[in-house]
Length: 554
Image 1 (tube, helix red, strand yellow):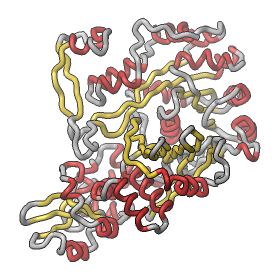
Image 2: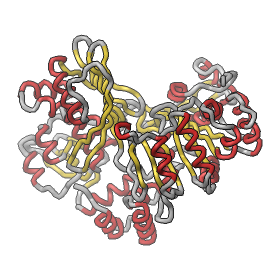
Image 3: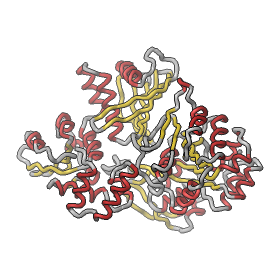
Image 4: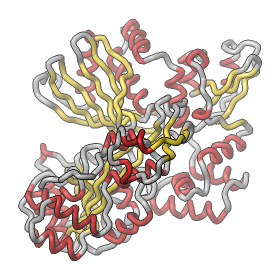
């Protein structure tokens, strides 16, 4: 059951959960940004998700079920038949000897109790409200493992490939996976999900059925079914009751067969603020100061999957209104944004980044987003666009912010042009956040920390340090982590930096000047998040290295 903004506004005001003036502001912001009032209420901390759940539950006269707050056994989860769990969107929240509470995102369905009476004979059945996104995971957990479901589908011999692909994608969505890997091995095919940046094996497929699955995905992604020895890239759309999901598909031949990787793309850009991304208040002001310039260039650098596009879109949303012509050219368009003109690169029609950017400049844009600067021609056009009265955002592959400047100069950009146009370079990485439901703290001695971080005393002057970790719970799938945040590094082009760029500097020279002007390394920003309990030291060391004594080569 989807509760629209109008119904939610009625619920929140009628029950006194939100002040009328706060609700009015939320409705104005939602209309302006074509978003939900929920996004505003949560972002401004006017309401928590739990309070919103309680309000909705109270409106329907039932309890609120926070599915992440309780541990249920596999036996409890799988007691409800799969057909009923999917039909009514239900899962068990709490079961005792005489009583059972069933969670659902649609408590208006009174027939749920009747349907479950044969399952819970002699027990009182009570309905509780749970959010739809929480129900997805609850329903998946109530199902049998993927391999068991695959065996059942194969035995039925009905729509084998479509049903198996459906099960894989539904599980990936419920587990908040960013990528699905389907990898043929010698005797079987392994399915893995990338969740919060880390791969997890979730099941295997008999190799005899793999070709049908491969062909099914190729057909849906508009790829050649008869091509088995070349890499192919495509996209497909997966339709669900509550909307559609776009997937980017990559197929590469390996010695054991064709390897499939599908990236799940968000339909609309999340209503994230710069603060939500993990940018400190001081750095937010630095970013906004650069973005308020009438022309120039802001670059986000980092490896693939480090959140660069999300950061730039969060920045773009602050300028997205009817007075601004905002145009993007991307490959692929990862987020949809209302009021923005978004262009998809298409090599088959010769619509490349460079050619598209030349055309965009003639479209009278105020702000341009170039998905990625990949070659010399795109870099040259981007710099010239930034020089001629446009504010240009783009991503770029570089290990850190300091390396970005020499790399652009190596792409034949004239130093005086780069010096005149570049306002800010943002480098970033994503780290997993410690699960808030099971986070615990403990004191650790500096000598123990030095075993994994030799330069620990640079960052932790105390002899005893409080560090945090997640014990593991139902909310995080017993991983101890849920969701991700970013660690950042910023280099702003001060007058001194502009002079240095004219001298074609090395990345070491760029960083030494930036550091003297207050820039902090990725690792240093990460240490702040470790101290605040947002992530763990081990997780930080997984994605970033301390800058101590490391020399960055040009």
